[in-house]
Image (cartoon, rainbow, N blue to C red; front, top):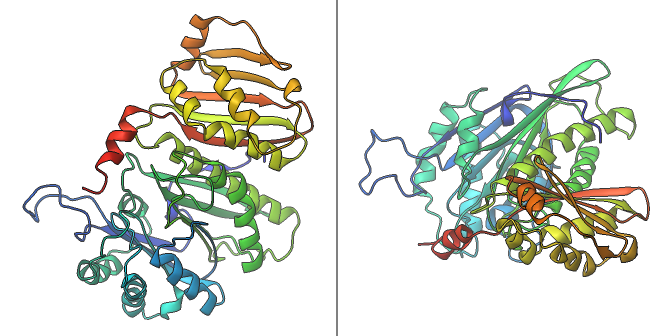
Length: 419
């Protein structure tokens, strides 16, 4: 999909009619042992709201263990005919595997509904953080009125930081595009650093648009683009229990509603890809303990599914990820991962290059390794962004997968994540 879009600021508030807020309510531990109201603490809960009712689409984790917020959100969207107007999300506590989880997720929706005077079913709820710890509802009860009072069209940053757990940076991206001469906007925010594996969804991802598009096509576009963005992301091979992508369209751009596939629909899908692909890349680069972004592109495949499978196989290889941390051009680990990919192709036709801003090293051609300079390879792999180029020489399909290296710090972070 060709990039024809203008990158703009605003994240979740880039689209017309969306306002947001974020605050610290006490789910996260305070920055100091004794809570001091004069000290700025990290936001741990956020809210964003549309001025009007939206068509809503969502994709959820395939983990059999699902967080209570996912169960409640799915039920709400079914009751509301896939319409929503508000999203509330908290970090640090996943509200998963708790006997009272659904009750509290539902309560979060009711609190927002009461403050905004809307039906509870038009509220989406999400949580991220530690699994199996009881979610305290009292801090949330105190926070919701504050969140509603502080809603503003320019507070995307407050929301984006509120969903961070082990993330080291916020993740936001937005674009401006045209539908039949009408300017539309689409933007989003994401969180995620660990427990990320391509088995949809991947982390928490929230996207808004002011483009008018039918609910059916909104869901179709989201499902299609998820397959080639978030589902092609892996940090550590673990699929979270709370993963969700939520997409809301309020139609305030005033374009004629997109109700069938065609040029307008393809433009919308391309804009959605632009945002979701960039958020996916940000998630990969900020993987827990990561020092390098890894991007594997597989071209020349007989079909897209084969290209996806091969690219993901390489990105998911722990041995390869460790080699990239050590800046070791151990191309055998790439070939090993290609070889056990569940796809049909002729390994004797495959080419592999390792590339970065510092140069390119060809390592494999036509079924065999080729000579290369270890010194040059070391220079190439010293970059913080490494590209693995694979050509199956078997067709015209391609796909890209994203990940990061495997470092000592990943173990340190996850060795005491709960405590």
